[in-house]
Image (cartoon, rainbow, N blue to C red; front, side, top):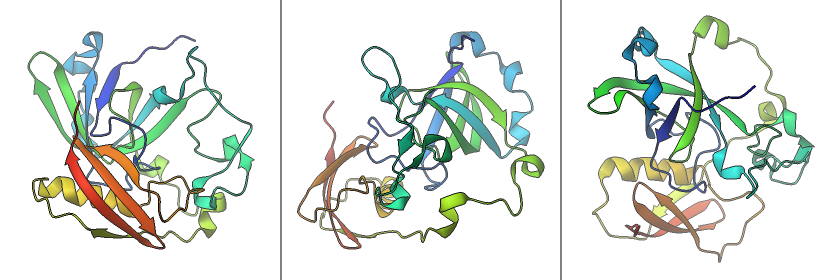
Length: 230
């Protein structure tokens, strides 16, 4: 079966590092789904405005090797298990899979009609890098997609902790909403879970800014936030 993108999503993440590991973890994150020219017919999304959420089927496009192949291992080390225990790739949501396909549920913020590019779906909570190819869109249907009493495997026993974020930076040029969403991203600890060096300075790009931070214990300290040079 040959498939091609129907759309691409535009987000504030130019790179993978820092993106939440699950959709909806940071609800404030905005994204815009822009359709490819052949799919810009408004009739194709008629009735979608009646739904609050949608499923996106997409590609882990940044995980491909130079020859276009997908890198994967039969077992992976889930971050939420501390990166120390290996389990089967199909028992995880690892981005490194035989077929690099992602599945995310996001909230519809609004649907607009933009001159020149047709209908645009504005979404919240997307966990994707800017420019990610979208292969399909399906409505989220609560009676079928939400299963009471479902078991979550190893995630059921996890204690979900967040970091306390402290700001050692006094530049107030960053917009308030951007600062709020950035703080939530950082509180979810974007570091690989096998890295725990309190002296290491980490960097990530978000919403046109370069962010530098350190983590000591349960506290993440923002050292600087500066305009990103492109």
